Image (cartoon, helix red, strand yellow):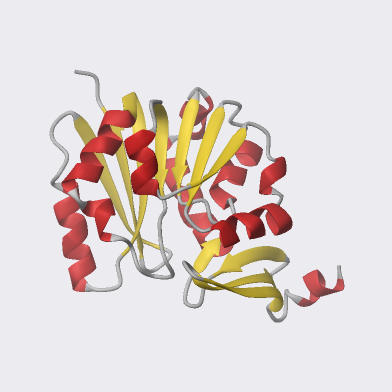
Length: 221
């Protein structure tokens, strides 16, 4: 409790480890809240939770409550899952895919992710998972970073088409991207152009300074 109170004045680091995938991982009390950070960016809770909460708000909490099956690609500490379950009161099935086993361990030990009802966490590469899964989803959340780096496959046509195939009609994609340069902004414009008239695409720039959100709705044929 003392560390939590003190964190309103200065951040208090309580755990740090190295990961072969995510490099440096730190759990810190910050403004009375536990957050998970990499070396240069917030991984879960903190600013990232605010970013994805905004995206879910854009989609609509009431609409999300009516969904049945949600896929989260890039779990980290599980802040978006906690938002879905605790704030939105989503009662359906959530599948979270996380590449880094060290991150999953931290999410379970420090953020109680393993105790969250209706949630299945899969330790797998997101690209491999979407190739293998036989399920369809009402909401697919893509939030994949290695520190500030976003893997190229997220913006490639094959992956985009596969995600679109897994999405139910009237379902949504929520995609969190980082735009640190002009090249990143151009990359996002190209990504937007990959969706035809069967999709409604909205971009929300400058969410928490360097993040740009996409909400993409799959329309009925």
